[in-house]
Length: 180
Image (cartoon, rainbow, N blue to C red):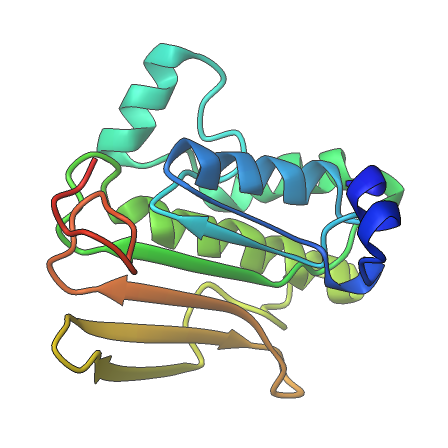
């Protein structure tokens, strides 16, 4: 990241990590491990941070969801260490995904909402919550319907946004719907 930033004159406040499936899980890891490097992360059809620590656990998480995201937030905060902060996160997931079931999107949001809640003021007071503060539905012309769930703090700043794409399987939201 440092090399690319230097070579191309990248604004260090606008470096993001995003990925699909295992890459989505990796963006959760990068956000937790390097909150000082990445301004925000994007998780598309992936897992929350430390949803699994081995292959067997990964398949279990993919099919049933990860561990308790509120306890998992403690893992994220430990990884962040003295660099802990509220990290903006955007999540995309298809309601028809049977490879990485949609509950994983909710777990990712819940985990990073709890991280933000604790990082904002050091207290578990739902300053930022896994419960959406806003919700809207829309449709891409000629494409799928989707629901957007926003999670804002008490000042109205949206920290997390989750898109649930109706009927989409384990596929890139902007591409072929045949899936992986």
